[in-house]
Length: 273
Length: 356
Image 1 (cartoon, one colour):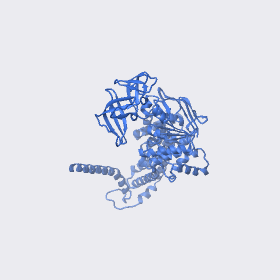
Image 2 (spheres, helix red, strand yellow):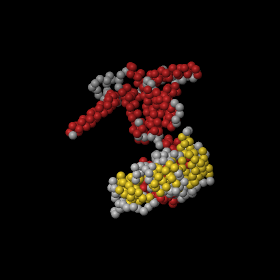
Image 3 (cartoon, one colour):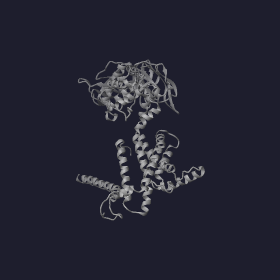
Image 4 (cartoon, rainbow over the protein chains, first blue to last red):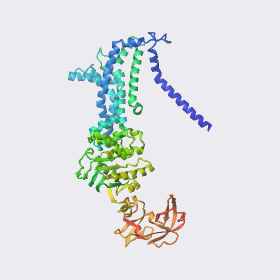
């Protein structure tokens, strides 16, 4: 009996230890970069000599970061909205219609998550070159061209998370609306859409974050002179190694954290993801 | 409220026939129950009435109107779903108001109508709650209120009680029946639970394998089952294999010669006996059939005892006796007399192992 209790306690203890390690592995870099953003010396050496808010000001004073941020925001929002327009009907069709090649299309829509960003970037670049040659529409290195690429990495999140919402959706609820006199269009807007809203919000949020942070694909699709925030960070790092980058990262982390917290107030993300 | 007619209604999915040639006539204000095991086509029939399943053949009329070709939202039926299917993002009051809004019910009267219906199902205080904040029984009543609010021509109930616990189920089915009577609702309910069906129905339709096996009142089905399936499905029967030899005589495969109600069946047949119609005694009983058997198994069920009594090497019957203080309490191995009048035994063609 005593042995049994000991084994159980040991099991719980080791589980806690492993969980703590995993959490630390995820959180330590975030904590480190946040800490670094406040160090006063230009070349980060341990221990810090003092603390300052200077680097945040320095970051915001750089046009590259501000413009990069605005471009990333613009591209992220546009790609997410267009991703929703394509992804919601796709998720509905995959969840509900038994058509030929359904499983195949489902896999295809999730592919951009699996394909390495560099490969994806190269392929889209080559594709856009071919399209531009064939149609003479200047999409290469344009914002619409970049958005077109980002839609691809947004869609897997939207389709996946809305699909998860739909899986838990009792279709009888839609039938109830029809039975009560709603036509299919009204039933969709008044009953189905509100019921899968958590999936839509979560899918849009994660899609946006993916697009906002994307570096590898954007590198191929931008023309010289245009930057997204991740590219601006990369370019800065080639020449300098001061805590400005840490300050930019902290602002980025804070922005996304705020977005998630606000979203979570309306939609419990833990229930969908 | 209106009369509901189904005429030669069928539904086929490829080679599979889910519903075959169902003709029913539900009178204005009548409570009809479709009863049958799962897969018998009862739910498909209900869904055809609501408009969610398109019939392969046949016609549906509600009142004077042929609704066969109408989509669900143009039929004035109120359906209560097995899962209740409440709108999770709307309050109780908004759920109930939904159908009224779809009908462009005057805004000024909307709240009053919702309150009236909620009061009818005794949920007056809960209008502002969300469905997930309610108990199962309360959710069921919201589903009912939502269907009643639109004053449907027919009320359709799809296994409405199957998600409630046993005690609540007994209460709610009586409530539904009283409400249905009070409002004079033409109602069709689907269930596999025969006790539930017998409690609420004016008439019952027993279905199996997509076909109507018998339509009638509780008494019709119980006293005069039309076939072996109904005899086994409504109430209980012991079936004895054998041959009908005419003149109200039946010879079991175990060689017993029994008196039974005279009928047209000849040759291989089964004799159906209701356990509660058999009489048990310690001495000859003076009935048309009077046999001696050995008690092989006793189930003590409280109000009644179920005895398995062997009458011959091939024939064993179930006898149900009331558990009275002064009554017989035979034990396994006891010799007993079992008897019954000829009219108790009903003969159906086929053999006991055949499905129906």
